[in-house]
Length: 249
Image (cartoon, rainbow, N blue to C red):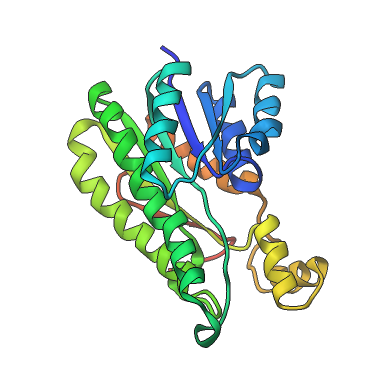
């Protein structure tokens, strides 16, 4: 039986790399992002490699959108038993400059989104007696200047992960988190712009501080997600794996 994986925030970056990796692992993949048309490139890449994929547009922080998205996956691909909560945005600023909208938007996408999508998918996992939930945290969960909203959301993701691991483990469902470090994505470009340096300067400076001597790429994270989704990881539950080129906790 071919299993179905749902990856949020999969139009680009880590989400796209994860969708491609899970497709290569044999999953049918539902590629979800805010706008369905933005998912086209990822869907096409999966199909070109011989996999099966559909694109979905949804705001993961909306209950209505979350319910509708999962229902469509069930209808078009079958019940999802793998969920990767990757959707995220940045609204970085120092605390005294951060607006309520900056705070609420980040918490909604990262934390409320992971909650809503997990709540909706878990019913199908429970019915199947098997499931994998992988949440994307971040090294920023340990604290990061200018990211009170993002750091709080990513720390919350870790608490959600450990709680779902306890609640859902008895049903054959594992829940784990991957916490990326410095990964070369559009988000990093946004951060470089905020700091008024070029992307190349930002990356070069960051690489010097990373023990392995380079920044990460989306595939580094996709590989970790792939492990957590595998049969081989069936006894790994409630863990947070820092993929950052060096120790973080």
